[in-house]
Amino acid sequence: MNENAKDTVKTDERLRIGRKIKELRQKKNLTLESLAEKLDLKENILTRIENDRFVPPLGTLLKLSRILDVSMAYFFEDEVVVEKIFITRSNDRVKVKVKPFYQEGEVEYIYESLEPKNQNKHIEPFLVHFQPMEVSDILYMSHEGEEFHFVLEGKLEFRTDDRVEVLEAGDSLFFESGMNHGFRALTEVPAKVLVVLWGGA
Figure 1 (cartoon, rainbow, N blue to C red):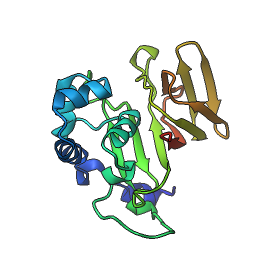
Figure 2: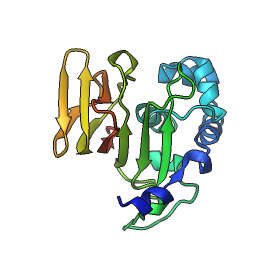
Figure 3: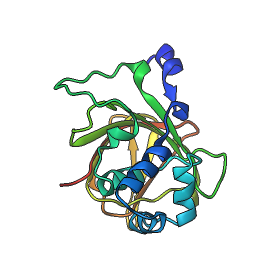
Figure 4: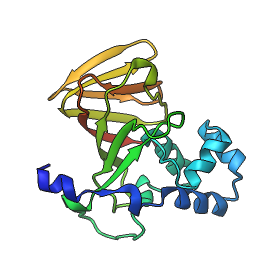
């Protein structure tokens, strides 16, 4: 992405992911408590997500899409487009900053949906900017499905409960995302990674 494109990427101010989650939850007649339990989240955290005070991480968003029977693309676009070919221009991407639930103000990582229009697709492509951080600050997730990561820039550390791998630009990673996993950049600048998620059958 060139410098001009970076300046035109929209930020999450135009999104109301929390509002959409709340509307879907109510349509499904799910209580806040029952949805929080399904997500393995504290109820007050889900309340903050629904009030658009926190943006859910990709793993949580994937779980939400499965529970609420929508594509992840639903959270990024209001308009349903019926096409067979979808093009997302660089200035149409939406940048979402994920902040830790326990540290107000700090950014855990940033993700951009690379295809926010097709709500019927089976894979979800993202450009993710993983931030440098201490091992103790890594956000660990687990969810159904599979993930593919291709490192575009920087150095990325991938961790599970019993394995640590370091990936550099040009390296790729595929894994079953049901295992507990987390990432961090190992340099002073974020690691830029192409991430493709599949949520399972």
